Image 1 (cartoon, rainbow, N blue to C red):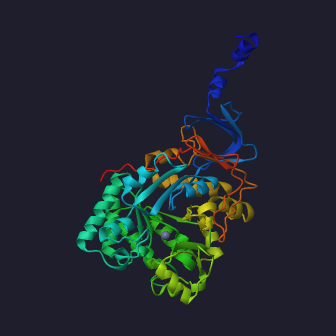
Image 2 (image 1 turned 60 degrees about the horizontal axis):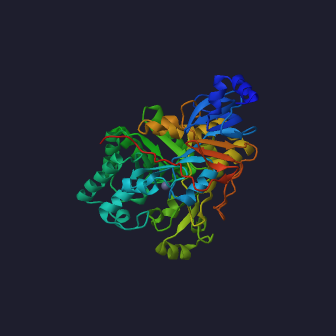
Image 3 (image 1 turned 180 degrees about the vertical axis):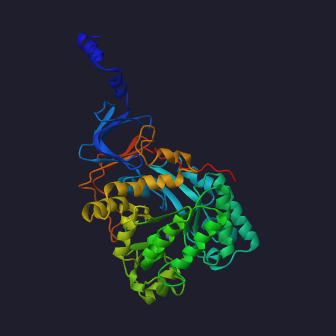
Amino acid sequence: MTPSRRHFLAAMSSAAYAQSNLDTAINNGRVIDPASGLDAIRSVGISNGVVTVLSPAPLKAKRVIDATGHVVSPGFIDLHVHRQNDENNRFKARDGVTTSLELEIGVSPMKQWIDERRGKSLIHFGASVGHVPARMTATNDTSEWLPAGPAATRAATDPEQVKTLELLRQGLREGGVGIGMGIAYTPFASRAEILDVFKVAAAAKVPIFVHMRGAGAKDPGVVEALQEVITDAAASGASLHVVHLNSSSGRAFELGLSMVRGAKARGIDVSYEAYPYIAGMTQLESAIFNPGFREHLDMDYKDIMLVETGERLNEETFKIHRKKGATVITFSMREQDIDMAMAAPDVIVASDGWITNGKGHPRASGSYSHVLATYVRERKVLTLKDAIRKMSTLPAQRLEKFVPEMKRRGRINVGSFADITVFNPNTVQDRSTYQNAAQYSEGIPFVLVNGTLVVDGGKIVEGVYPGQPVMSKVTI
Ligand SMILES: [Zn+2]
């Protein structure tokens, strides 16, 4: 050992020596952790995928990231995505999302779905077990994703309902993150059938994530739809999560919000989410567009856009494309209602997006940076800390009772998993549009999933798949 080397080692404190063994250090960023209230310049040390040091002074590590001028946030947790594949995961990661969950429609069978993604996912992934796909299996509806056959067009027989419930229990035993329901896509499911699903959720102590039966301001719309699921939650004891309260409520968003808040104030365990856009996206062949939809949803043919071509529909082209089947964007909401949803501290942000072969809705690729750029920075509808809470901490807390590892996500503290998003609050920006949804967000230079960089210097890191399955631990 040279004298200078000996001198160097002697000069290092034992703490500094330990710090130099860190895998990664994110130095001098503004760390915002809504769960603990921390909002200060800190350096984050990471070892073996876990945050091990939070220091006021810069840290040494094998890889040092200078986060000066940037926000260091817990990675965003999206409770409502569809199509978790490499194409979508890349857009999500570039938008700061470290966990993507398909909790609305869900999947069935569960084990196979998880096994297909193990070791191949850029970000964490998981799904609820879905009433829609289970009912499709039970009624032999062979539609590709959302039902257009028996599951959408008729009541289920008693044996079919028994089979559906058994598939749901099986999916929960295999790690399903709660039960997903899309009652609007199975409109002939009776009230009793739906209540039975809530009872299964209650027995397993998991929530129901539901796209409700009805939507919009006119009866039977969001009021009746909320009355059904709030009553079922109260009667069964199941927890309830209302997906996209914005699109389900339409122009009655304030009323819808008052109902879920009222239920919560009276002891029902209910949560709710919204996406930051005035347009939705769904399948034209689905039951959403059954006769009468224009009156009920305050939507006309011209408000429907074909994702494939960008073409707006009329009565004639509506009929043609509904028969063939098509993914459509629907312009049905008002800016003022989305503002209210974004401002509300208790409304979780979720995207409800997917991209297929470069086509889709801008929310799939831009929801999280859209909130940070438009609603926080430009329009000051909400604070940065509240945005991070709505995009990370609240969704983790919603799941932690039955997915215990979520207690260590959606936070940055010593012991939490290193799911971390580093963004520049002055430049973070969504680029995706209704015409071109397949555009990466900007201003998010670093994203870590379990301590592994998946976005480095603003670019996707190729060939790394640190995403782990998010699974419930329930007995039923
Ligand atoms: Zn939906």
